[in-house]
Every structure is written in C-alpha cells, then in structure tokens.
Image (cartoon, rainbow, N blue to C red; front, top):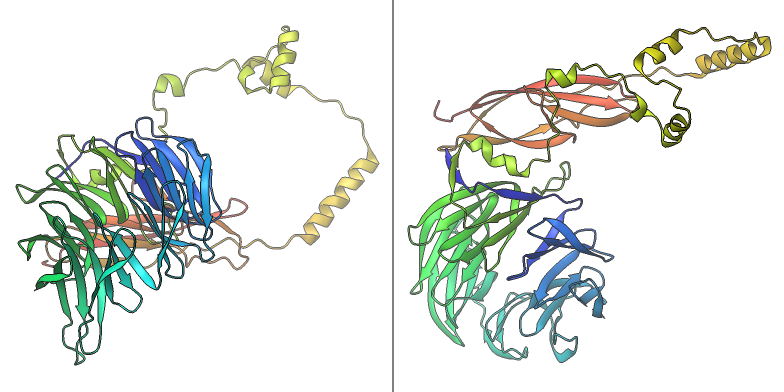
Length: 517
C-alpha cells in the first residue's frame, strides 16, 4: 500500500506537450506542443477556452499578468491577449530556444544570442552572444556561455563578473542559478586527468563576485528550487539535496533521476521518471506519490495549491502522455500500487450488463431509419416498422423477370474477378519470447516493454495491433507499449489485424521475480 492523492484529473492531448504555464491565481493553464498549438484550459471545467496555432514547436510559454508570451522554434517571440489576439511579435532569423519572463522578457535565439524586451515589445539595445543557456535571478541574469565559462550580468545584460574557468583539461558547467537570498550557485563537472578516475562533481556558492564555498556532491544537478531560506537540488543519481549554510546534505535518494523541483507551503514537489512525490519539508519524508507514464518534464503549482505536471515516455511507439491536475490540499489515502495508474487511463466505455435491458423485446425500429425515412413514416402512419411486419416483409417472394443478358454480364464479371484476384496471405502476429525478469533490490515491480513490431505480413497489409491482458482488457492499440508489472506471471495476447479485418494472434508470458529469490 502507498499513499496518494485521491482525486487526480487527466488532460489528454493529441500532440506531445513541450511546455506549460499556470497562471498564479486565475486557474488558467497554457499548454504548448510540438505542432505549434497553444491551448488555454480552465482547470475547473478542464475544457479549452482559447486556442492559438503557430507554425512550429512551442519552446517557451509564460503568463505576464493576464497576457501570454510565446517563443516558438522557427519564427520568434509573440505577445497575445488572454483571448488569443496577437498584440506584437519579433521575428528571430534563427528561431527561439529559451524564454524567461519577469520585469522584462529574456529570449535566447537558435544561435546563442540573448535578447531583452520590455513587456510592451520594445527591444533593448544590449545583447549577449554565444550564450548556451541562462537563468534569471532577482536582479541579475546568470549566463552559461558556449565556451563553458559563466558570467553574471545586471538586469540590463551588462556583465558584472566573469567566473574564471577551472581544471587543467577543462570542465563542464552542469547548472547555475539562484541560491538562498541574493546568493547564486554554479554546479560543475571537472574532467579527470587519468582515464578511469572519477570526475569531480562540485557546487560553488557565490555572493556577487565573491566565491563563498565549494563543496563536492554525488551527482549532476538536474533540478533546483530556491527561496529566501532554502535551496534544494535534484541530482541525476536520484539524490534530493538540501544546501544550508553552504553544506549539501542528502535528504533522500529516489530510484530515478530528479527532473523537477517546486516548493509550495511546507511541501517540496519532486518530479522524477514516472513519479511525482510530495515531500514534507518538516518531517523530511515522502507523504504521497503520483505515478505517471513518462519522465516528468515540469511541475507547476499556483497560489491556491493547484498542481499541474506533465511528462513524456520518449517512446515513438506509444501515444501522447496526459497532463495531471490535482489539489494539493487533499488528504492522502492509502491504495494498492496498481491503483496509481488509474487516473491517466482513457475514459472506459461501460458495457450494459442488466439482463432486463440486454434481453428486452424491442418492437420499434423507427430510430434506425434516416431522417428522410422518419419524415416519410410520419406522413404515412399506416406503415408498420415493428418486428412482425419486418419479418413478414423478409419472407415475401419478390417477383423478378428473367434477364438473360443481365445474368450473362454478372457471370462475366464474377469470372473476371476470380481470375484477377491474388491470394491473400494473413499477417503473422509475434508477441516476442517469454521472459523471466528479476527486479533490483527493494523494488517490487519492473517496467517491461511489450513489442509486437516484429509481426510479419509479406503483403504489407497490417492495419492495427491490439494488446490485451489476461482478463481480456485492451491495453494499447500500438505495436509497442510499456507496462509496469508486479511479482508473478503475467500473460498478454497480441492481435494483429490486416486491412480486410483479418486477424492472427500470439501470446507472451512475462514472469517477474525478486532478485533475492
């Protein structure tokens, strides 16, 4: 049994989500995707209110008060009203790469030029070039340059400090950004001099131009969340690290890399591969978890505690992963692990099982007629479309006159079709070989890929796939899917259909066992 939040809503999408933006207090969610679509969704009704269509992938999306700032991959920077009316735009020859919105708008283009704009669309003259990425601070901007150097600028993009590079054979800057208060940090990876030696992973704390402390950490920084009194880091080895008084302390180690961190009241929200966790900051423990199909890409939370998260399973063979929406003020409940997946399943069509309805006698077929036929029936009420009259009509003999020429034409057509028809070879379904998989220590499940893509059809007539579990429930209509399995034997059936509706099947058994057994 695990603790989770009882009500989690899913927002299903048609295209892969690339970025989201949650208004701080209105409950309006912006969703951008790979096809250049932006939707504004009301989190109460979960219905789209407005839609904007651009030409390329959305790479940046932010609220600025009640206006919408957009950066796309090909064209550049846009400002829209909340109703979707374009207010202004700036075209970037190299397209857009990253966006940040505060007192001003910062936009990084595709060739590393960092440009600054006012909220009404006026561009500043100052520009920084050869920028790899950047982070916005309180009154500063932190730049990671293409040559792996780090620069600190003021709010007008004028460089006030250039960090000297370290290491005899170079280094990689892994992350940078705001630390506690006005301090800032750099996470670096120093290259080893001798092959096989461990590379140095460190975090440096600065205040202005002064280096305050340098400490080693056990992984590469993937996520950061900071405020006036706290700073948390998420590492690629799953470590959750608190940095207090310049000293990094591991609070907990998760099974997967930490992708995203957000703080709301006394809860630290942690996004990893396949999970979102609620971590009680005072108790220093996980108090609930939510499962997701993919790797969590981002987490947003507004002032009222509405949480939105999304992820991608990085698998071209499966469908688009949904966004999750929930209220953080819910009281967690204990559920079986298998129940964690229910929120992101598509709506299930319920089959009628009441025998009085299933086996009832139906003697009115008027609802099966077309609109024209129903109008004609109303004009001629003497006609009966009940079961008895339909059955009698089917038994009537229909008079037909012999037409030798018509029969001869039909015979010739059938002969032609018979001679011209090629032999239809049905597809051969292949669900893969049976597997026995041992889990890692202390893990009671395994993530397994079911792969039916090796199914064959020499005539290339495969139209669709269908994976079913041992209860007959359809799991997916894709050739490949990933399933999470607990201990024991699990049987799956693969059905492969051709374009004529012909079907062949194959089955596979996956057995999950503990590594200790």
